[in-house]
Length: 257
Image 1: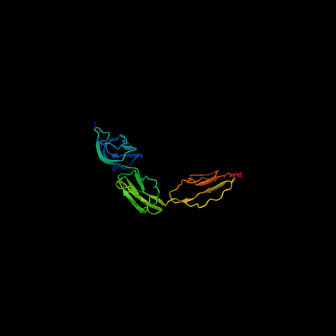
Image 2 (image 1 turned 45 degrees about the vertical axis):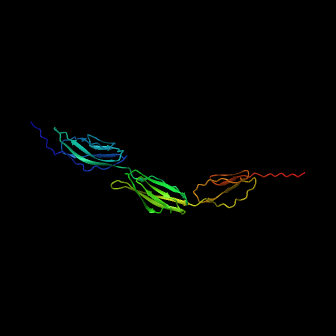
Image 3 (image 1 turned 180 degrees about the horizontal axis):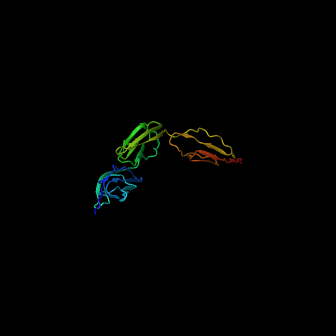
């Protein structure tokens, strides 16, 4: 007595493997047809990217890839016939890096006619990066210096004002990823105290007055450089508030005898 198995030729029907994203759960099941089920799946002299594994019974590739990479892998499947049919197929699997973004939160302000030096950095994506000024204008006197790792802004601003501009970064992925961010730089003049006169104080009564300034780069630090306040009054170094209860001034007089 003979038993004949009439079946289709075993073939792997999966076409392309979807790309995986770095540090994101990946799950894809390879498909086959023909032969005698169940199938047995394995890698043939190749390896999956770190963090991924192949289930031999289901043909599922799963895990969390943790390194950016791109490689060719050879998948082999065998059926349960005796002897088994075996077929293999080469796939390309790419681990896409995390989304590109500009890491620098903000840029420092500056005083007019003072040296300026700041750096804008990007993270993730696929280095090296390319940078450009997408829109807006830098403060007069500042210029952009480009490198693969970062964008630097240097120089000496010559005009006061609030300037806004947008920086775009592009990575080396194919197709490339882009990210952009708008920055602000305020160029201020020298500090000037604009309070011209303080209100009079009365002994024994609560006193409060706030000094005002403009220019420079707030926050201001206040201090007395000459003389001193009347007894009972104090100056808040951070707010410029003069507060307190001035004490009574006692004067004694005597004759010259």
